[in-house]
Length: 481
Image (cartoon, rainbow, N blue to C red):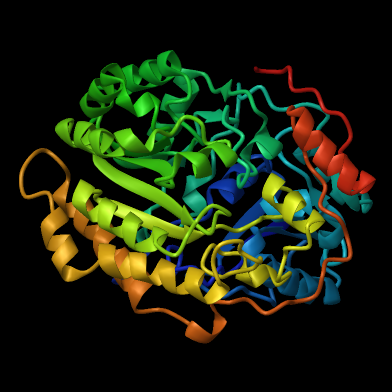
């Protein structure tokens, strides 16, 4: 049997964090998902070629037996263009990733097949159907993966010198929190599934990098599990970062173990300074009155704090931008990302706004957390756009950077400088004033569908009440939970 060729493509995102900015390097590699998919393809039967269009052009003349494209909402239209081009040549295309998983019927207008959710338990069926010439429709596992015996991602396929952060190790899937603006629990479940520690360590060894990111939705989601992982990382001379929740980050046991095992930075979704806003977003673990103390606590352990804030909640008033910017500078956050709330298809925010006719734009290119795609309640769209810019201006000003620089203590000054220089250049110098408020676009022909039905009864009522087509088939979540 001849060796077949599968061409995996990550479409260009036109995103500041994935676009090469300094010395031809991007801040992040977006390839973790495709590297994991590539690992599921037998190397003795298939040659796999991978392209990240953020750093190199797609080879549209590639002689391939199958093209696989992964896409998030903000660059799915580019993914569709790529898929259309290959299909015109008669090359079969399969799509996956977050947006195709929630909008599979839309994706099938451009692809022969779509993988919904996790690929591990369906990839063999995809390859069998490719061999039979019957690849078509949707592929979705009847249960979630147990997270044991997972294939090691194909790190050999990545152009490592083109990225600052390129090694993303997933130790768990799922999230306890169910925030209204997030799709995590609807893709991977409301309960955590954990990967065996020895398998995590094996992947780290294969990756061969000292600087890694633990690519979990909430690494501190279960304290004892996080401690187990960090104990195993001690003595390996690693430098790592992760995303955690603000409540668990107060735990000195966790922070001591993090510092001892090489943690250099923790990203935390603070989102808002308003308790009421957080409550309505189901972000119950956050306590704004303790934010400053949390920043100080992480600094005392030599850990950088990357704060994530969001503007455009229904409770926000025009003063929110200046107040948030001033607070983050005075509290000494090391880096911050300020996003515009974006109702991604399939999230609770999406269904609520769709029901109330508040979606103002269906242009997926604008679903990047930097465009206004809905009708805000307490803010004019122009105010929301300008407010995000104001926050970045204040936080990444030369005066602020001088004030916040870690002149003393154990924080990593080189890493601090990399993030601040990248974000200063990305978010201040590359603005499109005319395009920040999105154009209406064309309403989608197909409804959003959920890979997993939410466990909350009020969510289910909203989704089912909106459109019966949104209801997914039942799926077992017992495995590995």
